[in-house]
Length: 313
Image (cartoon, rainbow, N blue to C red; front, side, top):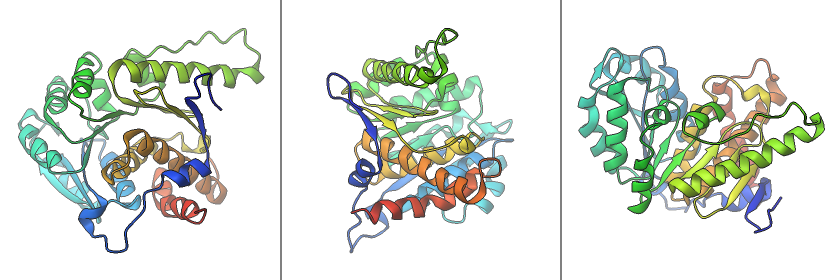
């Protein structure tokens, strides 16, 4: 599907295969990207685990995960392939004292992600904003990191003006409190046209937001839309409603982070990760059904999803 300007693309397996990064035969850990995830809190210990596992399964050479000291033993025990490190915390969430540790770690990586299981507090609002102002590495923002910037979106424009990459990954509820405009006036719309109308609304809203704030936007949901500041938009063609479970978004964050750290352009990293995430979900549905499939199952299916694309080339 393309709009009048030829800038909206229905993203299929063929396009996904073209975006898949090549892995040189003489590559080493550093070749395939160092990435860092910051998140987790008491009650949300699984989120950074899902993100870290997904990043490793998507091909990252080195995966770091920074979490509050209080949950460090739990997260470290569950992240065998990631290098988990504890950071200063307060009441089970990261504290402002973690700033310099995160800054140093992320600026030493090829990409970073903030948000999975982060939690909410005024201290975290300040911490996330400061990180956005000073972390030069490409950043993926998801979950509570989006909440933290809802009243500070000017930092997105500032990063864009400096040439720093930012990818935002809201679902529709998060997009709403970020100021995204989506209509819900659908009572008079015939059901068979509803999906098409909603898709067009999502495309235009995502495109407008990405253009205004200079970020790559992944508007999650049915027919996930990935929009780039240059006006390019990709509409995903994989996935199913069995993926609508807590933790699924954390898996996607880790996948986007991994591909970004491997050197893909932001919009390509995001669009490809979304396709692979959905296809991994489709593999889970085929094997386990929509009711019983879990985010951990999707992490395990990532290699098969990638292998499917590799076999196409």
